[in-house]
Image 1 (tube, rainbow, N blue to C red):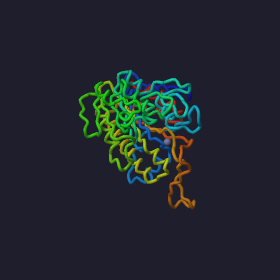
Image 2: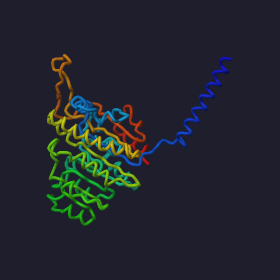
Image 3: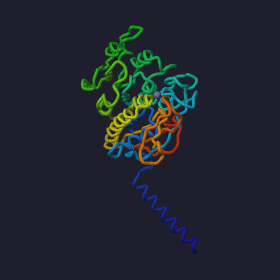
Image 4: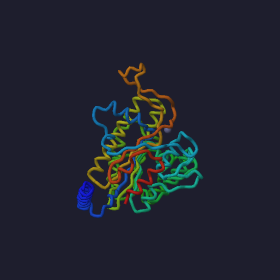
Length: 358
Ligand SMILES: [Zn+2]
């Protein structure tokens, strides 16, 4: 008797649930993302994020992400990765050796997610505060056995098809070259709009490159609101009916941490936070954009402690001028964002993005 009642209740609950799920989702297919924006805080471990939370008077952008996880960052060659191998794993989904850009562990070039999305007909862009030839942007744009070959990476970028917007520094690698090639002139002839500042941009649908300085852009706060502004401009230029892929890097979080410079770290995190808010505001309005935020590795071995062990004050303590081997966070928002929770290898991130992107 009891069993029969249980079965009939179960039947009613099941029927109700299936009616509910049918009426809310016609074919039960999960929603796909038309646009994908990946933001990388170079050197941004959990303590770097927490440094912003401790010093921010308001809730941070990180608290706007409904899902978060942890990424394992070791490279093929080292338990402590550099930016080249760490960024490559995110960009193309394979472990490679420290120093390599856009290759797998056998030094074979691997297509980056930017290249895959371009092949699929999406517009693509990269926005950074370092030279555009630096390790992380190079991982998405080039393939080279050494990150130090800035001029070779610039040459590859100058000939790149399927790239629509590139904003950062590093002009000297295009113009002051050992081979005397005038890469900017060549790109201009090939239809690129090339500018020195964001203010000069005229969006006429052409490919657009902004190189604001010879090498890296100024550190925060000296560069003003360059990164959030450049990110907003890139989104405006890339947004189209086939969708877009954009990679944005808070490049100099890493620089501040290499210098063990706590005040500049907080300024860089404020700048990255403002950039995240620009991206999330767009994604919220758009409804078709997946946003994934992560890091290539932690820099500085940062901990935040009371040196007296009394819990009454907080001091930033740095344990290295180099990188460390700790988890880095992953935050996600938008269609398919739930796929980025839990512990994942950094090579998994591209797979999960590809499952979600349409
Ligand atoms: Zn570094």
